[in-house]
Length: 342
Image (cartoon, rainbow, N blue to C red):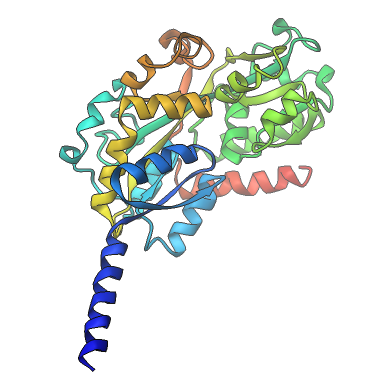
């Protein structure tokens, strides 16, 4: 009997110890290369349970129904505000993040997290226009409003993302991408209905392949995707719309109910190392918010004006911020109608 009791205690102790050496991470798909996960596990002995999502909406819905068990999550900028309103986020203890100093100050204290209390900026980008120069000239499309031209009938690829598609429509009308006025959102919906005959498809996940294979030759794209796609199809060109554009930042947060906070801080501090930030950016071809990591990138990336546009260009952009449940719900309603043909 003593043997079995001792065996039970040993098993219970080892199980508890094992549970302390894990971390549950939930991020955008393909934003953390597997080799980075393996390197962290090897250096720390902490096992990562890794899962991914393809939209902020999917991530948020999952966490609202069951967030217990998750430690580190990677929402985009405007979802930081939404998650904080739901009391989901842990205030960061910066003393446990000595590598936080490596971040570019440009991405700190933004409107979605004014005091950078909750978020660690990781990768960022711009939503703009892409063309294939074998089919179109850069002077053909300088602004989002140029998409309305009849010459683009059944040609456009738009992202399969409600906020992402409403942003150009709002900019065409001279409104902020973060506008919440119901009449302005309705006007944006009507502008998109006007655009609909020119839309060939909505796609986000396979956008790079579609552009490389020339299944679409004009449309919306994320700048990092085009930097990547140009290697396979050098005819592709990214354009920063003159009538303004949306900028996004994918940030890491620690959930308030995270069961492994100590491990979460170790993971975030690991990702904030310049060598790790550089390795991630090099692998996924998106701009890093880590200033010291950017310095380590090869010149063809760190000096690439598409991946890292000048601050003069960025002045035409706006960071996404939370627009509240009412406006978000209205956009989702219009989005469903739009996808059904208007």
